[in-house]
Length: 445
Image 1 (cartoon, rainbow, N blue to C red):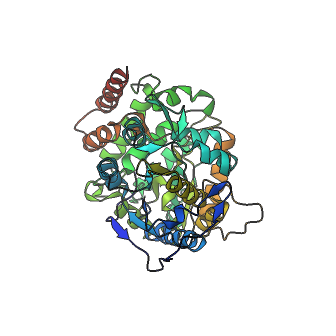
Image 2: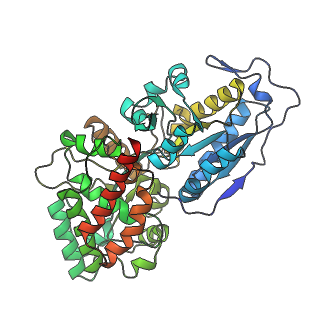
Image 3: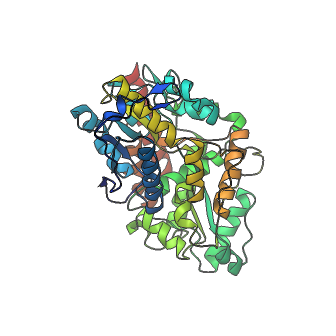
């Protein structure tokens, strides 16, 4: 829910060729000597931002150098492009062997159902991925008989993600607004900023999903982790209803902000990514979005990051997030050597070395850093790492609402502009989500 740069196909200039296969090359228990004779290893990823793309290029180069004869044929696609093309490309036989894939029912779930992804449980066991990431994180890549969160595992992610509150320290200071410690203080601060003629929130709703993240983040900040079962059941397709007081109140609040002048003027014609760039340039006091913008945000030292402040009475508030799109192996990996090479590639992408490379670039890795790692942490990343530790310790990592059904993202995207413009009520917005979800549950039976 976050990529917008035009899709690009990249074949690195540093590709290494070998006329003869590397004999005896091995990583852990997997012999790659046969697999290394492959001319190309087609890989799709969604790291289209400049900083992220540079990290992927570096990691690909290092993997090729360690596996002479292997050439990474990289295609970078935006999140939305990936949703539109991945399943079709793999079905047609001209897609990637390795790909990033969204974990929800509409993407990973649908591809597992059609036999387009291969389970990676053997690689989890042999490479020890379950020692690098918690079981609750790996569970977000599990599907079995249409059930989310259980069964075989079909991927693993390289980056952690948290949707939180970006703030501009200078703007807040100039307006005499203290950093909010509770949700009630946040609301009071927004009112004070508006009175002083400062746009409280940067927002862009023409493209991408800032409004979705705002609604979900506010709603989940009002849930204590000890009461997360209802949300988990919704996301994992176990049942329940989106039609709750909390969801309606969150939608109502965001509608009031949109209608009451709390968003940056003209937000309806601004894309999410453009809104972020405006925020980096010093426009708007707050912005609700995810850690995937750390690389961009670090260019303005006035910008900080924190969890959405919880209302009074909530001791362990949840935060929308988890992990980025998962690395997965598609059914186009026809042979065991090719599958093993794909497993080795993914292993490198979630290794401690890769985690340190991501951290040095200012991004939040899902794999814990090695004990002796000494990355150059930005203030933003330091905040993100501390939040990641706290959320995991409190079992408070939340979910993206669109994971709950194959069509939920479209339903939310279709109705969000209507909500923000006041053309539908908050009750109607939530009802549209619930109708989508109930139809999905019915189809599963």
